[in-house]
Image 1 (cartoon, rainbow, N blue to C red):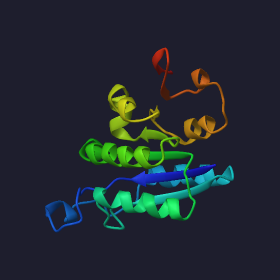
Image 2: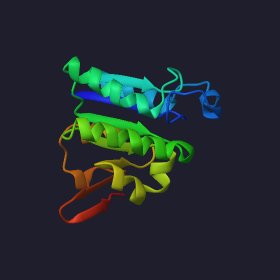
Image 3: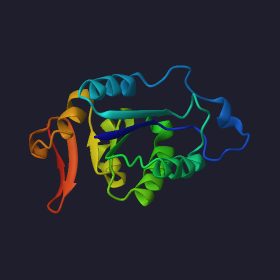
Amino acid sequence: MKILLIDPPWILKNKNNLWKKVGSCLPSLGLAYLASVLEKEKHDVRYIDSTAERLAVDYFSKIVDEMKKEDYNPDFVGITATTALITNAYLIAEIIKKKFPDTKIIFGGVHASVLPDEAINHSDYVIIGEGEETFAELLTNKDLSKIKGLVYKDDKGIHFNE
C-alpha cells in the first residue's frame, strides 16, 4: 500500500512571519519509527517533515497536485500533531481529502491521543498512544473492533477500542 506520513508545519502561508522561525530541530521520531515498521512490511512510505522543508499549509495543495501527476495516490495518510499544530494538521487533512476522497486519513500524536473524539471528526481513524502496531494492523484488513488503540467511525457511530 501507499502510505504518506506528515509532520505538519507551524505556518499557514508561505510568507515571512514569526512562525517561520519556530519549530523543532528534530524530525518526528514517532513518524520515523512508524515509517520503519511499515517499510519492513513492504509498504511504499513517503514522509513529509514540514519544519525541515520549511513548508506552509498552503503549499500542500501543490504537493498533492504533484503526487497526482506522479500517479501517487496514497491509500492512507498518517498525520501526527501536538496541540500547537493541530489546526494546521486539520487543514492539511482537508486539502488531501478534497483531492484524494478515497484516501483514508489517520491522526495520531499527542493531541489525537488526548482528544480522539475531536480528531475523529477530521479523519477516518485515530490512533491513541504508540502507533506502530495499531497502524500496521489497520493495513491488514483486520476487524476494526479488534485493533487496540484505534478510534474509528462507521454507520453505527464512533467506536473507541481499548
